[in-house]
Amino acid sequence: MKIIFRNILKYYLKFLTKIVLIIHRPIIIGIAGSTNKSFVRMELIKILNEKGLQARSHNKSFNTNISMPLAILYLESGYNSYLRWLPIILKAFLSIFKLKFPQILVLEYGISKPGDMRYLLSIARPDITIITEVTKRYLESFSDMDELAEEYELLIKKTKKNGLILLNNDNIRVSNLKNIAKNEVILYGFSENSDIKVISSEKIELGQKVKYLYKNFIYEIIINKFGNHHIYTLLIGQIIKNYVEKYKKL
Amino acid sequence: MFERTKDLQLSVIKQIELRASKFPDVISLAQGIPNFDTPLCIKRRAEKAMEDGFTAKYSLSPGMPELRELIEISLAKENMFYDWEKEILVTNGSIEAISASILAITNPGDEIIIPEPTYTSYREVIFMSGCKPVFVPLDEDKGWAFEIEKYKEAITPKTKAIFYCNPNNPTGTIYTKEQLLGLSKLALENNLFLVSDEVYKDFIFDNSKIFSLAELSELRKKVIRIFSFSKVMAMTGWRVGYIHSDEENIKEIIKIHDCLTTCAPVVSQYAAMGGLEMAEKEINYFINEYKKRRDLICSRLDNLKEIFQYVKPNGAYYVFPKILLSKNNSWDFSIELLEKCGVAVVPGVAFGPNGEGHIRLSFGRSEYDINKAFDRLDKYFKK
Image 1: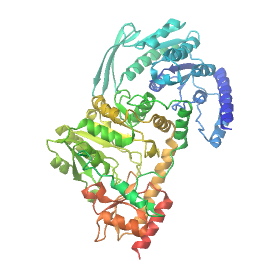
Image 2: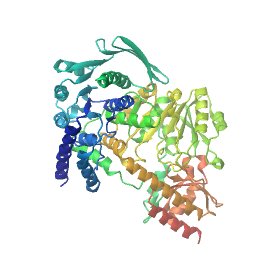
Image 3: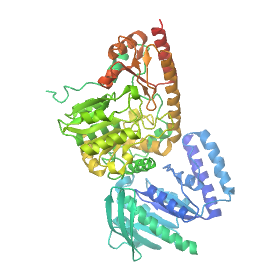
Image 4: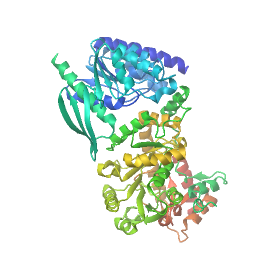
C-alpha cells in the first residue's frame, strides 16, 4: 500500500512540477557533487536576493525521489503520514494556478544511486550547472568511480544550450568534465589554470583571509567561516554575481 | 591486576536501576531517559538507508560528510562556526565524546576541575584516564551558580581542564554568560581547556537562549564542545553525538576515537541526519512537554514542603531537591523510597560530595509516572 502510494505521489508531483516549470520558465541553477551543495545553495540565494532577483530554494533536503518536486513547488514533505500528505497534494495542484513564481530556482541535484541523475533531469534541466566535488562518498551504491562520474557527465550533457557550467578545478574528476561540455565552462579553485583562482588563504581568529584572482583583478576578502569549502563557495558566488550583473543588463 | 579499573565504579544510577528491577511495580524517576519514542521521520531515514544498502559498512572515522555538513549548518545557526571536514567529529554518543576528549588532552596525573554536583560518569572517565577530578562546589543558595573564586583556588600546575555540563545535570541550572566568561578568563590565564557538555541545550524553559563559549572565536582552541542526539531527539539507544573544536584539538581527539570505536554506527548517523533535517516539530513538542512536566513535578514537590526544598530548574529534565529530614543521607533515603514507596530516585551523592543530602528526580518520564510516583510519596510522608 505504502509503495503504491509513494509511486503515485512521485508521478503526480513530477507531472505538476513540469507543468509549473513550463508555465513560469525560471532560470534553474543546479548544484551537484558529493559535498558542499547546501553551503553553495545558501550563498547563492543570499547573493541573488541581494541583487534584487527573486530566487528561491528549499531549505530542507528530503533525500528522496520527491525532493526536487517539493523544492520546486516549495512544499513541505508529509513524511510517513497520509493525513499530512493530503493538504500537500492539494497545494501541489493549486500551485499550477499561482501567478507569482521566482525568476531563479536554486536546486540541489543530490544522487545516491545509479539512475538518480537521469530521474532528476527528467524533471528539470539546469541553465547553470555547478559541480562541487566528486568523492567516494556514495561509492557503496555505485560499482566504481566511473559509474559515479557517469551521473555527472549526464548532468553536463543535459545542461541547457547557452547555459553555464562551473567546475571545481582542484578535483580532477570534476575538472575533466570540461572535455565533454558544449557550454561555456568556468573552472574555479586553487589550481594554477583556474579561471577564478585562489592566490592565498590564511586561517585567522575570525575566519579566513582569502585572496583570489578573477578577470585580471585581485580581490581580498575575510570570511567568518572555516574550511576550504567556504572558499569554494565564495568563488562560485563571485562567478554567479558577475553572471547576474550581465543577465540584468539583458 | 586491574590497576586502571580498580577505582572505577558502575554508575550509581545504574546501580539503583539494577536494584529497582528487583521490585515489582516500581516507578523510576531515576534514569535520565526520555519516555518518548524516536520521531518517525528519524526512524524512516534510518530505514531508508538500510533498505538502500548504505549501512553495512564503516563510515569515515570522523563520520559521514553529509551529517557533518548538516552539523556545521546547525552550529552556524547558533553562532558557532566550525569546519565540518576538520573540526567536527561524530561519536558514539556523548560519553565516547567525553572519553576521547579527556584521553586526548590529558596526561596521567593531570587534574580536571569539575563543578559539582554534576553528571556521575565524568568522575569515572577522569579516573579511567589516569587523572584526578577536583570538585568545586556550586552554590545552591545562588541557584547552583559558579563561584569563580573557588575555581581560582582549585587551579594547580597540574590542572589541565575545567569540565562542565550546561544546562547542568542534575540541577537543571543554566550558567549565565557572565559566569562562563569568568571561567574562560581563568582558562586563558592558566592555559586550560574548557570541556563543555551541552547535551541538554535544547531543553530551556524560560525562552532564554543558552550561551556557549564555543561561540567565541578567540576561544576555539580552548573550548571542546560536546553534544548528543540522545536527549533532544529521544535517541538514547542509537548512540550518536558529536564534538567540535579547533582542528588542532580534533586531529588529536580523532586518534583516540578511532582506537575506541572506528566510527559511530552508520545507521545512527543516517538517523541523526533525519533528525537534523526533519525533526524540528517533534523537538518543539518535546520541549513543551518537558516544560509541562517540570511545572508538574515542581507543584508536586511544593506539596511536600516539609520534606523537600528545591531550586526550580530552568533547563535539562531534572530537579535536585534537598532532603529536609534529619536523616538525610541520600543513599539511605533513596533506598527507603525504593523499598517503602516503590519509587526509584538517584541519591545526590552520586553527583559529587556537594550533592549529599539531595536526590535527583527525572521529569523525562511521563506525567502519569510523575503523578503516580508522587501519589506514593504523598501517602508515605503524610502517614
